[in-house]
Image 1 (cartoon, rainbow, N blue to C red):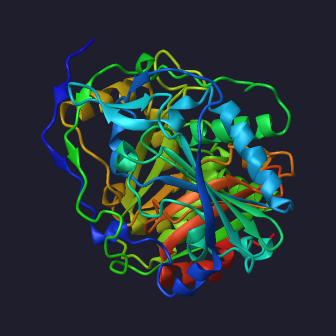
Image 2: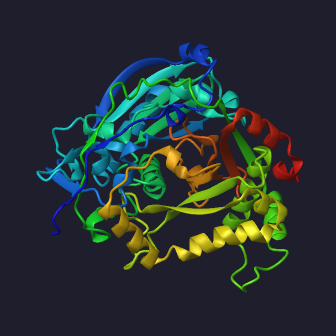
Length: 461
């Protein structure tokens, strides 16, 4: 085993520009709509014993991110029975995904790890009621910020997993259905692992006796460098001033199959000049969003704008890791240009920048990035996303509308208000199915208003 690489102490400071949660102001009246009626904890259904798993280079940078929040809502009744079914299924699925029932810890060298023991509390399950809120209200295109109380752990840093559960689930009884708000500790898993867990949990609740694809829990198979981090939480980290920084708004834009095909066709109307592959759906949509957000921001021609995406590296690393690898196996990939160049050139210019950045991030580039980080560890903060950035997280490949616990597919799937900043974009499988894609965007309020009015962006086909 390699010796720890010691870094200097890192104080996790939370600047006002990243502490701000989208749409916070003027929403206090919503808080009274949600009433907590009980909290319990769920452990795996069998004894597992003491387990320890070192966090690796792909995990550690996310310690200063916030818990990753997802909101799913369903049309159904019999709330109490649904809650018991969810808890029963959770006991079974945690037998495989037991790391989510553990805590963050450190070994004797100060290296972060996930720890599980049978005497730990397990996953937190909060029960609540919000009888004034209906499914239709949640399904609107405006953001989830006004419904923050439906999802636990708002403004909670992943580092707090040292003393908090790594997963908290809030099940809320609505006027005509149920909302499931989930907060996952992002230091121990990425989107691929999140939806693997959610679909496995749903399978158990729907009648399966066991998980169809077990999680691959051996993180050190992909990287075994032991990195020592001396991190400390700032005082009052959860209760920082949330009213400074830009006024952000969130919006969900729904792109139909026809709209997606139109975007892809336009971007591919002139093939890439260097005879590379045609632009994929993701690359085409990425350019479309980047171009129109840049337009809406009214940047000067000489202003730089950065495009960032969080790429799954499971098949990029050498040797490749299975799709079921449980943890973070993502890298942020960046490309940059001047706003004037992005807007004045044909679509192929911007799409090529995205395509080249993705294709360049091969096993060699991943290895170099990891070695560079291990030599001088840096904990990510949102200001690191880049100037005038558009940053894309999540993926339309995740089958979020297949998460059926036995009472039908969700009416909607959204991201919470954690990990939002000006330019953050989440992509989801479209509810209408097929090649449709839902695009969640958080932007400065004035820019978002311009984007909403941009017919060339919205493409109501």
